[in-house]
Length: 417
Image 1 (cartoon, rainbow, N blue to C red):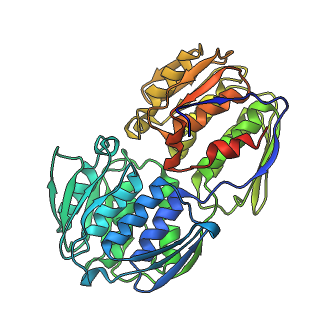
Image 2 (tube, rainbow, N blue to C red):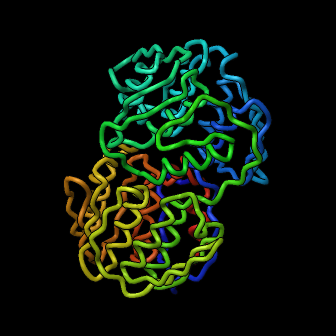
Image 3 (cartoon, rainbow, N blue to C red):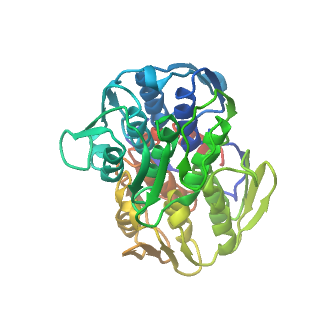
């Protein structure tokens, strides 16, 4: 992929039906549950991207056997008995927050030492809550550089039982503990010490665990075992937000197939936000359709669907009044400071954008030709590209960063023309 990609404005409203690749969040949860099930599981519709390849490598390091069939998006996982496994050595989680934060509790199940590390970007993200929780349940934890950050070594086995963890930084800490919980001697009983962000992701975790035979009651998981399963992964709702946003800002229509009213993903509710702005939304059991129209600015709390906040920032540029996004202060600790970065880039394009303590306010305007920086953040690249569908002269620097979760994004975006 080139170092810079020019986005060509559409000459007409979009009219398309799309099916994004499989959900990253579901793929990585299913990979771990399958790896911890003593038997063979088949995952259909899996995402093949940098984040999920990181998880595939991680569960392979735990001892699971992973067989890929990219042509039909299928992964076959032969799981392990963690109680009979030793440490996994050093595992590279690359840039993947889900891989690293899910792997640390899983590594605590093993009777040996595992080092979890990743890119410089991942090393800058916080891990203190999950490392502290693992100490509480009997694992030995060594921070090999800075306290609360990767790289970190975990030596198990952890015994489980009651544990406290904060919820305001990332729901991934809680999800990782829950997924490891049934394989601990005492199970796990989690108490949150601060309000939980991104609640739908924890509900997703529970649903995937249930598909592999483990029931979570509240935040308690009794000791037990996973069962192998044949599991189908739905399309990625965060990725779908870009195409739904394209419909909204061009006054066109986009149908996303495979994301219906029964979706496990909270980000499917991005369509509700667009509806509040004036778009028309149709929902069925297996699809969601957005038709654009005159868009109005809104005031919205996106704490539970924060991965779509940058998408909304791009859409808000074309509304008829300011849009205030609240409840997303914690996304400053993602791949980049997503609050500061989106405001900086919109200002670069001449848009009046204001950084707030817990989000941002976007005033509509006419974007001038701009080369947007992407901060090695896939969501910056994908969201800001939407502006180029309406405004001429928009370029995306380092477009290859989308490989983290959606390698074919720009190819699929071009099909809207």
